[in-house]
Every structure is written in structure tokens, then in C-alpha cells.
Length: 152
Image (tube, rainbow, N blue to C red; front, side, top):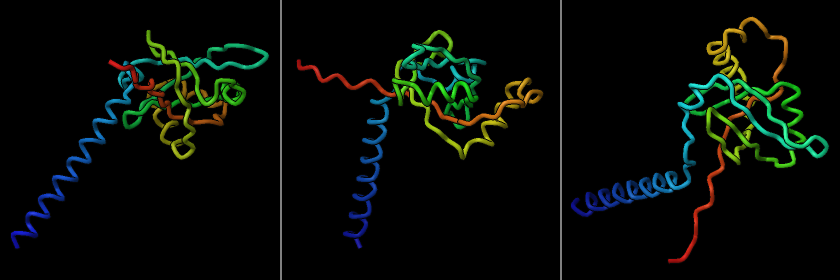
């Protein structure tokens, strides 16, 4: 009986240790300045795409936060720019006075209704004007800078 309690306790300690390592690794990949509250507080963000014949273009998008994750809807023009983007899968993003050089627009078609409802709650005009369809709903996912591997 004592042996079983000891092995159960060791299993719990091992599970906690593994969880702690996972949490520490997640903290290492955090992107400085990336905070859901920054997106919640802004009404418009900007993404920059680069097209072969056009060059750099900044698109303004409405943004909502659901479960601490920022989401956008792209209209036909913005979606086309993203499809032709030469820096794919990354765009540059401005939110408030911060810029992020490598952000993925992760398509989330299953979030279409939730994002639409959140947009309608946040933006009064979204309730009035539903002229444009939105071919893409995306979560904004920052790319963490690689850890420096300098020698000391």
C-alpha cells in the first residue's frame, strides 16, 4: 500500500514538473508587447501586405477579441491582397503605436458567427451596414523572435 502511494505521489510530481516546463517554454516564446487588451482598446488595426506589382499596402481592419485572441474579418479586397502577399504567411501589423513584423493570419472559418456577433457588439455601423461579405475570418498570431543563441 505504501509503495502504491509513493508511486502515485511520484506520478503527480512528474505531471506537475512537465506542466511547469510547458509553461516556461510558452513564456519563452511570448512576443513582447503582444497583449489582447491592446486589441480590445483599438477600434482599427492595420496590416501590411506586399504584392509583386503594387508593393507595400496598409489595410485598415476592425478587430475583436474573443477568449483573449484577436480576430479580424477581411473583405474581398483585403483578402485578395493577403492571397497575393509575397511575405506570406506573414503580414506586418500595427496596433496603436506598436508594430509587429511577423504576424500570421490564421484562417478560422468555424469562428465566422462568433466574430460577426462580436463585431456587431463592438461596432455600431456593423449592425447597419452588412453590404460586403467577408471571405476570410482570421485569428492574429504573432511569430516569436528566435531565441538568441550567443555564446558567453
